[in-house]
Image 1: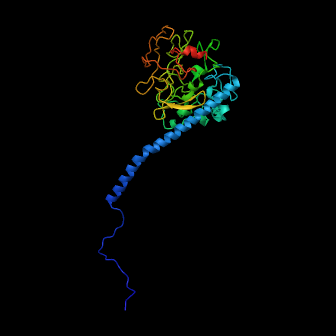
Image 2 (image 1 turned 135 degrees about the horizontal axis):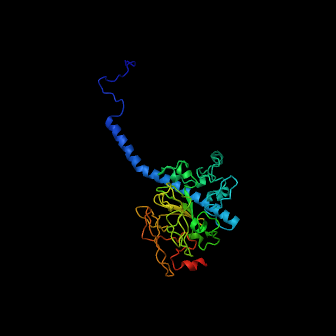
Image 3 (image 1 turned 180 degrees about the vertical axis):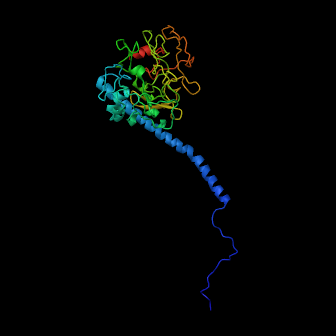
Length: 352
């Protein structure tokens, strides 16, 4: 008879396997490291693509706001109101362009509670952060301040040093011939007719007067200064006072500026996003946008060639703090007619 009560008991002398060996764990870890190394670029790429898409959406919204402003007032907006007597409904004196279209975009440009808390010490409220997400580029979230903006807080939140710049030189340059004197003629405002809207930038990723970002990035400077047809000198506190040219965007002295030049910033994998006056958005390298690039950055460009009428423009005298390139940028995507001022087709295109 078979004894069914007998149970099998393993040989106590057999080795027990309680887990992975050290070698096996190292192999698994090595596999994980390799997989992460392979997947990380794709993850980062996907994140940047998403950020760039959000940036393009923001630029498109800014364009729509500008078009509504144009429909209401029959002209393109100034980059800021220079009349010191003008105060908007929230008490902001000489509001910048973000304020001029923000209500058309659904929300005030700056935080209203912060404006109340700031008082009237600075009636232009430069130190109050932007408070409308349309003015934020998510690609700037990881960029650290290169200088100390004690009043501005996070760099892309400051209304003067935000993410996007306006092509003020050709669309809404309401500076006066004599800086600070509103009784003198405006340089180029308002512009009522654009000959080629599909090749005219209105907003774009802006670097500002600091590298990598910050300092008057509310303006978007073209590759070279705008040529003035009257040849006069624009009074400006910056070292860019050259007869026959309007100065670049950041036109004031101070420690918050590294360069008096606010070009497009190529912060999306080496490309900058821009929106044109017909509403379409593109992504380009700085060279494709007409800038002259040296060491990865577009330096201040102020050495013009002879114009098409054969008249040589005056050359700058001394620039002690700025890097000057001997090449001449191309403003074809900023002028409103699709050609640079030095092009033989420029004057003809203005009459189209």
